[in-house]
Image 1: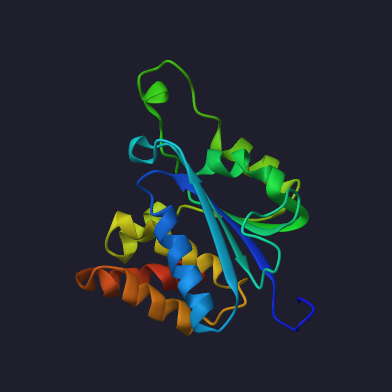
Image 2 (image 1 turned 30 degrees about the horizontal axis):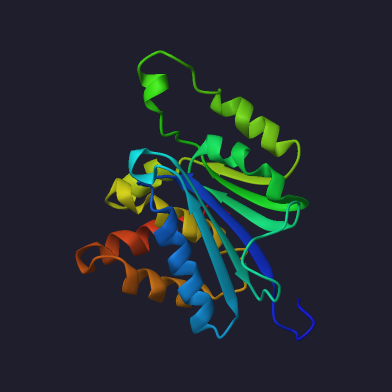
Length: 196
């Protein structure tokens, strides 16, 4: 809690271009506003359209700026497993890490120039340090009706920890996705929420 009794929650959202990282941040941010919670956000991304790293800092109840200080985030929502490793420096000792276990393989891996880290080793490394919830969000999105709902699966998973009601988050999902995909995204949210 902040000094004024407002809940405080710092969330790092990490993924690669095309996964819906920014949309996920926007949905959670809008939900915080609907709950009348102060919220600040900052995003950084490289060659997002080519699968580059995308990271958003989302600070609910924040009073001191939009960038989360090192070793102080309450949670990391990683839409891609190697991106979880890339942003560990922001996590406190009691952080929650929500990880999609299906990787986005860069061209250097698919062409044979380099190799991708073993997923089980990534998860094991994370679990030795943090409270980790790891699952294949891509498969859950497919089960909901479309692979592009993977980011909504992840929002559903992190919803268990946010100081925002699930109903408000769902309303923001409905308002933020194309109308024809609302049912798919709500199902994706619900499948994600069952993981935590």
